[in-house]
Image (cartoon, rainbow, N blue to C red; front, side, top):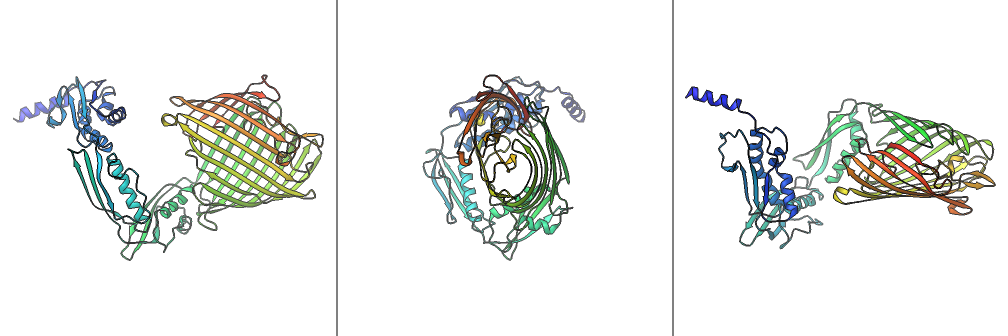
Length: 591
C-alpha cells in the first residue's frame, strides 16, 4: 500500500496541466438577457477558461465556486428556486470527489434554470426610527431579491444610527420562500440599542503630526448625541489636509453611554513636487512646477510654491511668468475654516500691454459642506504698467469674496454634476477711485449611454468691472477673449474693446463653450467643441461690443493623472475666419 500511495502521489505531481477550454457552453433556460449577462459576468469558470494555460486544478476550483457565485446572482434578482448544473467532461462537478483528478478538460458546460421570479409577500421591518426612509421596493407584491432586503435593512439601521443609536443592528430576521406561490416573506426585527454621546477621539499612528492638532482638525463634537454624519465629516477633514495617506475610524461604545472613536492614521511623505506642460500652436509652450510641504510645523500647515513660464515662442506676445507662494493652516477658527497667506510676483507681456505685478493676500476659506465653499480676504498689489494709455504705477487694495459649488462626480473628467464659482471684489485704486469686479464660472455635465460613454459638457463665463478710471485700472483686470481658456481657434486675447479711442480690454465679458465627449476604445476618446466669446466696452454689457467664435475636434487619452488633451480648432466668426488652424496640447479636459 505504501508503494502504491507513493506512485499515486508522484503521478499527481507530474500530471500535465490542462489546456484552457476556450469556450464554456453556457445556457440560461429562462429569465432575460440582463440575467444571462449577470450570470456570465459572475462565473469564475468562464473567466478561467478564457485564460491561456489554465491548470486543471484551477478549472475544477473555479467550477466548484460557481455554484455559490451563480446562486448569489439569482437570489439578488429574486430567483429563489433555481436549478444549477455545472459539468466538466460531462460529469457534474458537485458530485465529484475531492480526490478525483482531472488531467485534461475537454468540455465545460453550465446550465441554469432560474425558475419563477419571486415577489414579496409579507414585508415587515420594525421597529423603525422616526423619519426613516425605506426603499420604495420593499412592499407586498414588489419584485423580491436579496438586494432590496439588504437595502431595507441598511436603511432601517441607519435610521436609528442617525437618532444616536450607534450600535443599532438586526435583532432577528425570518425569511421564508413559498415556492408554490413564488412569494418571499420577510420579517426583519431591529435592535436599536441605547442612545450614545460622543466621547473621545483617540489617534493612533501619528508621528510628525501633533495629537492636539489632530483633535482640532477632526472636530469631533465631544458630549453631543452620536451622529454618523459627524464621524464621516471628521474623517474627511483629516483626509483633506493631505497629511495622511490613510484614515480609518473604529467606534468604541463605553458602558457609561459615551462612544469613543479610534482613528488609525498613516502619514504621507512630507514633501511633494509636480510638473506640467502645455503647448499651443499660436501661444507657444507653457511649463510649470510646484513644491509642496504637507506638514510644516506638525499641525497640517501647508506651504506651497508655484512657478510658471508661458507663451514661450508665442507669435503675438512675449514671455509671461509668475512665482507664487501660499501658506495655509486648517482648522484655524473652526474645524472647517482654513487660514491662507500668500504672495504672487508676475510678469505679463500681452499684445496690448506689459505689466509687472507684486501682491500679497490674507484670507479665510470655510467649507459649509462637501459641495459648498466660501472665501473672504484682503489683498494689496502694486503694478508697473505700460499700455496704449500710458506708463504708470498702480496701487490697489481689495476685499475678494467668493462662493463655490462643486457637485461633479470627477473634477478631472466629469460625467455628471455642476460647478459654479462666483467672485465679488470691491477695490480701491489709490488716486483713481474704486469700484467692484465680479466674475462667474458655471459648468454642467451630463453623461448617457453604457457607463456614460457619451458626455455633454457646457460652460458659461461672465465678468464685469464697475467703477475705476479705465486709463488707470490694471489691464489684467479688464476682459479679453481668445485662446484656450475662452475661445479656441482665436488668437490669445485677440478680442478686446475700444476705450477712449484706445484698443484695450473691455469692462464686460461673456463666454460659452459646448463639448460632446465620446469614449472610443481602450483609453482613447474624442471631443467636438464650439466656443463663443463676447466683450463690451462698458460694465454689464453696455456700450460698443463685439464677439467671435471657434470650433474644432479633439482627441483624449486617459491617464491616472487625467486625460491627455489634443485639440485642433479654427475660427468660425470674427477675425481670421477660415484662415487659421490652432493646436492645443495639454493634460486635463479644457473645463
